[in-house]
Image (tube, rainbow, N blue to C red; front, side, top):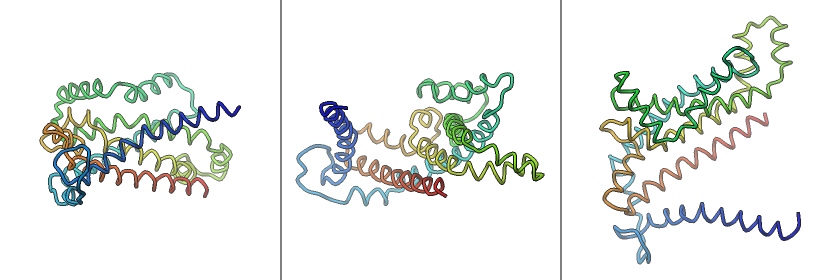
Length: 260
């Protein structure tokens, strides 16, 4: 690669970095503005909006509600997704490709179409809007990502370990508990964090299937109807920092597991 191409790629890279991070930095900075309106110049600074986030019971309730939904939907998607991945990986049977295609389909459908379909299906099944309906829709949407991550990890599992376990008299269940499951822990952890953040950030399905209690994204959307304010920037910044911290911790912990 010549010098000109390196410079061009470097410029494209830094342009992308600026495109991603500059809006985030502006969002954080605007949360310190001592005014009810977004815009420059910032004449004075305050921590009032950030301290107000932790004193606002509505925001804290929405945060806890979103967290509960994310945790429950993640647990369901991990159990179902891991089971499907084990069923599909390394096996050939009639209908395998059909099962795989149907499993991946929820991740390919546009969010708004998926939300409308879930709403219609929930009404047909008699599922009332609320936490249960949101958890169900998030779990279905997250399963494909679990399947892809776990299948990728399963494809690298040494077959000799499974054969050795069988030669020593272990049945399939014991082999799964002592060989397969420990090997899948890094992949399951990574998929769990991804699903957790995906569910926590989901707006469309939460909006269409939610009841009277809003999730955090829906609450932010409701506040946006009265116009942008530093309060919204502060809420978004706190959520960004918390989810970012979880993501960084999970990435480092997964690397440590892979090394071990």
